[in-house]
Length: 599
Image (cartoon, rainbow, N blue to C red; front, side, top):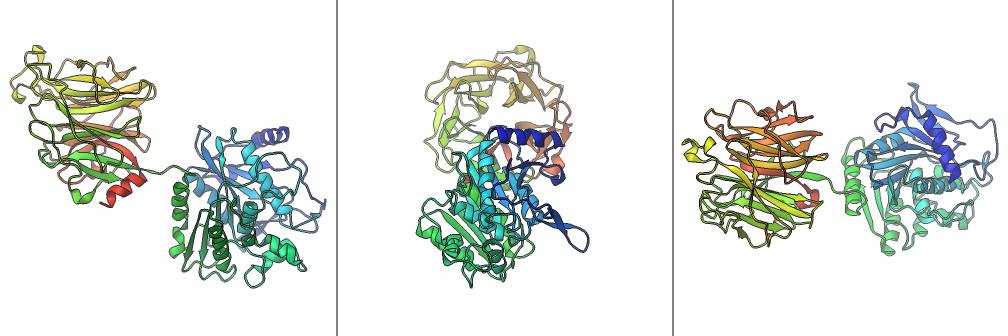
């Protein structure tokens, strides 16, 4: 452990900055204080192999094994990590195509990556060249686990990826992790998962890559050693879950290498997946042209399915059409700008409660109990709201009418309810706009049919019992359509100024230190010279994005801000389904979206 800390401190003194998109600035950590199994040879010096253009295409004669560190952005000690073994026939390391570029891809999907610059087997610098690469890869896995806290890594999610001969090394690490090839501590060297890309697996004649075999085992080799390093024969029930990628037209490393390893995994009931592409040849890296270019996405889906990385999220938008008679509609977006209808814009849930049995202004959130909770406007004149819950947005509980304003004889309506979950108190606050005849006469006018709304609320833990209804927000004007989001330690209320004389009909902000308020005086308007209602907000590209119904223009608009002070109208950048009315934006896991898409 002291050795590792010294190495990290030494590396940190030369680290200019960790940036996954700038390989020249990556930290490198030495694996060994004293390299085991080594023979000193001053004439054997590490250097780059270059092409005719002078470009470095590989590393030769490695004597100082090390890890090049590419950390993904994470502060929760929960990142998965992958050790990358570049290929090169055990004679060179394809450090860029099958190293740094792969690390950048892994970073892009939230995985910290470590490019292993392992010793290439050589009798000149090794007492036993056959175990040299295995020593390095075992120590690489142990090094990452030892420093899991420093690098914000989950030590139970440390995997390996290998290309070509690097695939042989990765499969060796996956099957020979208990081999005592050097003195070590009790840290496990077993990868938690394995990704093998056009790998050399076998050392058997007729299937192996002969260059890799000779470089690793020598020209004259015993049957026992061939058997030992033919890794398809070393698979057992403890071999880590594996995905294999290969091309049928690989003439350097026959596809049977992957097939035989897959069959061995299957025989021992090890979770396994294999993708064999029609074309690609050998050494395609992250892909050139053809069907094999899909393999990184296939790997990403496999990592999600095996709970190595979380599912990506999809933006979901719940909305109504017309007067809300047919119920709940959904649209989705991958980028937060272009939204597409689901189920051919048909309803997902028919309204069943309230005077008019409408489903207007559907607000959906994910609660602390893993249910999606929805509230909505059931009628123009009712004294309550609708409620239902669902695990998957497809199968819903029995709809319930919640009479939140039944105690108030002069309540005219209960409109645009929203619900927000408070993880600190583990309860839900439901809030909505109501006009109570005779209340707040200072802002009462005859226009807008005499409506003069204020925001009211109730609190519940289970949607069975509710606190007494109370006044929530009184800004000194007719207010409606409030929705709340949290930013840091502050709560932001996005709201509509419903004043008609003088005409406002715009969106504003208010702030509070607590979810239940009190909220500040409303800000200046954040929308333009048009009538806007039904705000819903979420962060897109790191900026607060507020979508709203430009209801007199019969289309949707949006504004965006990085600081909640300066707002840019981005209505020309967004696209919503025709006829979309007041709704709510939220995120769902990709699997939830796919289930909805299949309907």
